[in-house]
Image 1 (cartoon, rainbow, N blue to C red):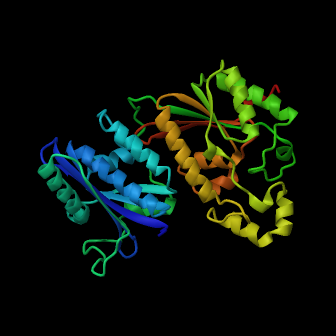
Image 2 (image 1 turned 180 degrees about the vertical axis):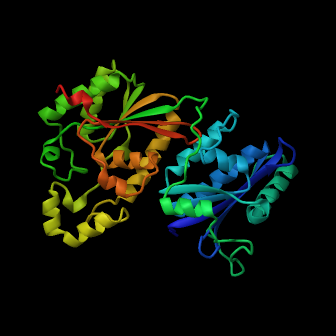
Length: 393
């Protein structure tokens, strides 16, 4: 079952704080209120806040399994809503790993927003959480009850389900992104992602679609990679992570060498978009041979080139890669060597921009962008497409 947009209602609690704890999450169709999935589990002994975060995590996991692209998470926990919206800092060290887990899951969707609701409007998730707390109190252990997209004849919209949008939610829907109102410094170190586009290839110079074809760097590209390496070395990266294609691996090797031989690893999901039948063609070639397909592709990120991959598909795998990198190298500086499409999508998400951003941003060969991300989901874009290091090259 695949859906475009869902609403998650999540809750958690503990009998005592800490005490026997559990969570509940309900995933609904936003138009009808129909239950698409439920999750609940006993957590043994935990705090209310831990249980609330676990409810949100379970709901996001269920939404991802349903293939949702957009999620609105509704909770009666002011703390979780404000922290994950970026307005409150996460001061308790026990909650930071949970916030990081949420942030990694969020990258699997096109958009996730958070809405506070009163407890009486969260009664389905509250009932699941209370049943899980009963189980925790009875057994003293942890168990899980999972229902995925199981709809009975008596299932239907919650009587308190309300599809009316308050003013703040309407503004978010209109702008396509929630406002961040917290510029306060964070206590935990950021993970710095230094995004490096590979150096020039012959296809790059000819402005041809270059996706999965394993095209090597040109002589110009090799010089660009060396200059980019010197620039990145000044940022003192702890590791270099590369797309599997040779043009990126060669650029990554130049960066690693300039940085004193830091480790290099390959992340398969950083590979370029699969342009399918358009591989090796110019834009003019595609316009002449595939006019209808090109118009459809330019009109929606859900459309793929013939025998290729859509930007939505690319975004999903790239978010997964970014989440893994953030978890594996939290607080470190990672040089990420990739291609135009993945880097554009990373920057689009980091800037909470719309899809039009993808067509307005230019990324040069060996250009460098810098994004800082925090465990609580905070993001700061510091540099976009810096090519100053190439001026002498």
